[in-house]
Image (cartoon, rainbow, N blue to C red; front, side, top):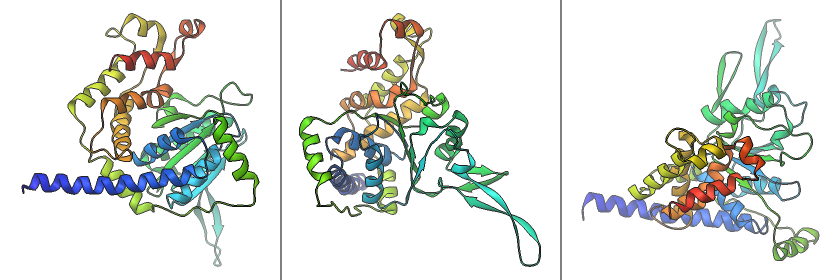
Length: 332
């Protein structure tokens, strides 16, 4: 047996094992979060890809419960920040305090903020000012924060799962485009169907309490994230990713419809996000390689927050979803 085939067999074994654990995580989360299988799947894809997710939905759709549940099942240290209009950047990253020791010598000591955790829930992130929202940018992208000129590394793994109320609600601020691009996926959470809501009623108002156990731990999650990056991606899938992302950008090479509808489109980070996400989806589904169907399935959650409509398109009732649907049809 050749070295290449032995390597492939070993990779396949590791993928099967990691995929089985990912499905167990999904099942555990679904036992508490009813009727949101797609949301759980997309969030898991984000974490296995090593990224951050933006969860959007009206209050009461179990966004907070989802993050807390995943923290428990994944065995990660998790913290929660409630974003409010008066929240300051130092409330997130921490600050330096002046201390005096027994000899009277004074020195500054850094007090770490809640960002120093493995799974951070930024609850209602768009209720804080853009300045405070941007305090997360450095940690999300560079895995450290800088305070008074000194870098402080955040733990690994480090993931931000931010919840956001729809922008139509009062007291919300739109997230800066630079921060939106840092989120691997935008996960839209809708109301559960009637059957799921019925099960929820009995599960949450009775005396029986579901106790969750950790399925993974930090080292197992990091190993799975490294494994995702080893999954081979065929040329056909790579071509589909590039065609999709590049066709969503306005410019001299774009179609007339895109130039009329899109004010600004996705950058290279969208292509990178798709490459990782389709691999993670293949792992969860128990497959050894992603397909073009994975690209189509993940196009909307990856592209939606990285594009903006022109004023004319909005006036005509065009939506980002409809534009992405049109673009994905060209891949079929």
